[in-house]
Length: 132
Image 1 (cartoon, rainbow, N blue to C red):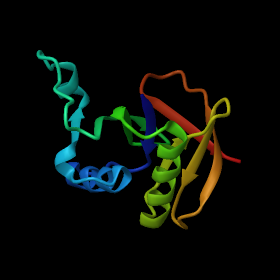
Image 2 (image 1 turned 60 degrees about the vertical axis):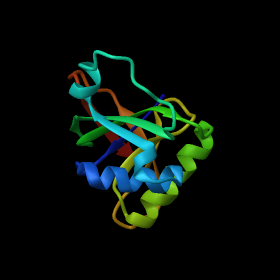
Image 3 (image 1 turned 90 degrees about the vertical axis):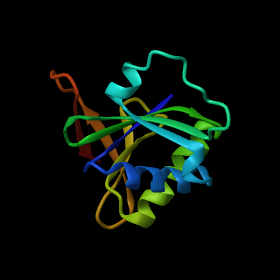
């Protein structure tokens, strides 16, 4: 599983378009659920034929939307590079985790990746970052 954060909330069609590009597949091969839909699923999810499963939820702080990828075939470093590259091209404001402790990559207005550090927040569903 991999989590990353969007600074602004994106619609479901925008998320499908983004992940279609990340996974290099059609939107039909991706399933995106809200946290409520995913949590209330009473049957086992059929993952056959899917290239990705994502769950989104609203958060507060430096980000507005948490994306949790539950199923994907790409190795984590490849997935991170693809997300960063596509976010840079689209100028999509987001935070992508790096291998270092509390380390993140931030993509903002200029479409250039920058290093960021997560700051501790005492509230639930709150993510705070500072650029390095």
